[in-house]
Length: 515
Image 1 (cartoon, one colour):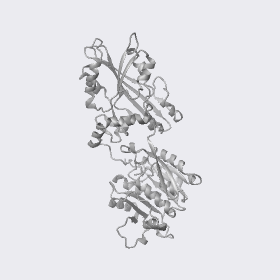
Image 2: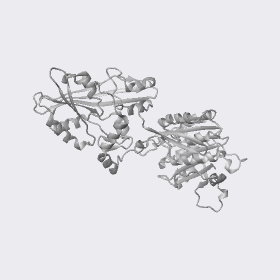
Image 3: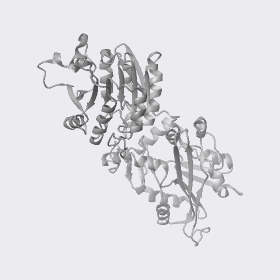
Image 4: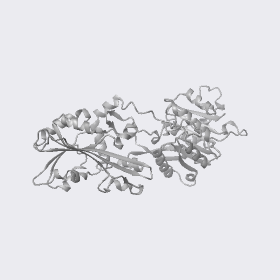
């Protein structure tokens, strides 16, 4: 499923509400995966730190500013850090206060129902006059919003990330109740809110943390008065793309943005950690190296356009062995994703190629793959454009590139949910070239789909095609094998006696033309 489009329901001049091509998140993580993430939590965190080492989280320099009074003064201060990770808190603390003695421990297999046990263990080792300093992600944080939209919810405010590690987002009420039930009083409770804007990409990042200080109930320093509650709203920070890379290393100012590499990628299109992998695709006498999302992250990836699917591999192989399909023609690929392998192969013989997708991140990676694999003059024949099916502005932008229509339109695994079928065919009808009665059937403008039937069945596809003015001319494999010589698609597989690589026996090809 190379597409990551969010099409409109119609094509008319009055733009209809956009259609979300992915199912609305409402089921969350399935029980099988929930149990697996709990059972193998240690493994996922070990892989996380093996991969990122100390580069993912920034050093926590806010400790001195926020809680310096707890570490200063005469005498040795004994500090226990629970969940130390790679030491992003420990080392800045020791640098600022050389006299502190730090005990650091980390625990990976932890879920919300085990939090009470953790606090009970902490209370056993906490001195009567000691404090628990707490800071973690708060509900409403950008990261939580992103995970909510990807069906990665395990339970209330508890989510799994794309790499299998998990994160909990705290509310003030939940945190207060949790500590009070386990014998602690609240000394301070605060909400830290910071906002970063990337004007170039028109993105705003809202980060939220809950910050609190607790002490043992009845301790010498505890107060019977209600704990002070504060909300810190820092000024909005504007970050331009050319300095984005430095935000992972250098503090901005007093309202420093605590940003992980993953959030930096979301904001700036940067991938400073290696979450992608390179796939080599060998087609006849050509080899392509395609960068896609690593398989480690694909099981929770919302954008199917960040992967290379079997249908794209098959269609690219067909085009490589049968360049006459697109030779001298104008070609449009719908929902090509980050790979764009069919468009790149087509550029070898076509007159002009437009590779499109609805996902901006997939398009960014597509541009990199095209530049890395194509050289002049073929590179000049291929452009990438954003196209959400049914989006009038996007369609008109494509027409500005080619107002005569496309002789060949390709789509590989672009049908993911039934609601996407009609906008797909309607968009193709808007952009396909007119029929030419002077040409034989296999030279007429065609809309070619290659896919594995999943949630969309053939009758639904044929119904949508008919509504939009298309007719099915040929399909493969065909149940009617009495006259294979008359099949357009079968001829692609028999040319010169060569067999085309078939990555999956479930693949289908459908060949449409305008009525």
